Image (cartoon, rainbow, N blue to C red; front, side):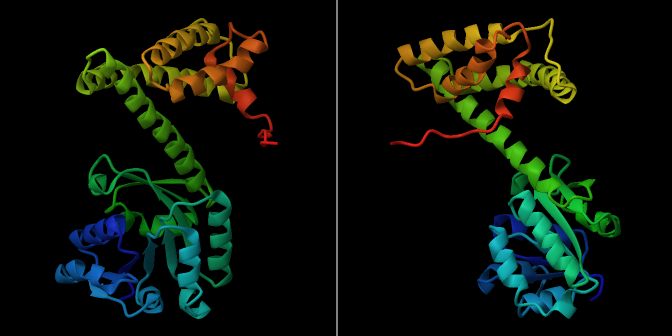
Length: 296
């Protein structure tokens, strides 16, 4: 079974990953603390491992998809070090860059190969052209198993630093959370005036995405160059529009938490006399050390 793949952790995503390996024709070993969750996969041809040690020992590639790094560490502590030697461990658990780097060091000390990964979509998108998983860590391990990992989603290697996947995933999740919250806040505002969420969605999809791509391209160039000059909409324009929207949101009795936060983000740029710069000039202010004001 040296070419087999094990999936450790059978939540919604882990189950989806195991199913995709099976569909792609890979011999798939599965393990979950609650053994009953493996039953549907066993019916499809998966092999149940008696424990995590067996799952790692009997497969060349072990994919962990669990809630947090602490749980992965607890499971791997049960595995004899010589079992890990020569094996590739892929960790698709959400966490921080430091956790990923510590995990790679731990695996390398036992002679194994480590890839840290981040799933950038929902289970329903796995196995489709939309789904994407990013990986960082051991380049040789990625090359060796890229074909198998591509059965899950588009696989993209980010770099040798194992922390890169978590940095990018957390940054992406931060943006996604604010974007989702912004859409719901915008829908609540439009809904007050009798405009349906579907009509707002159509506007965002048909026009907004192109607008965002243009803006993000310009702003990323500003940030990387450290120069925020613009001949397009300035911070002053965003500041004035933001306050008009915020005032109307509050007037109709809604909290407007995100538009208020955006207005607050632009304030330091205006206070610095930089209203003619692009709104990306927020960036250096966000980079300054933050000292939260604690209640007295």
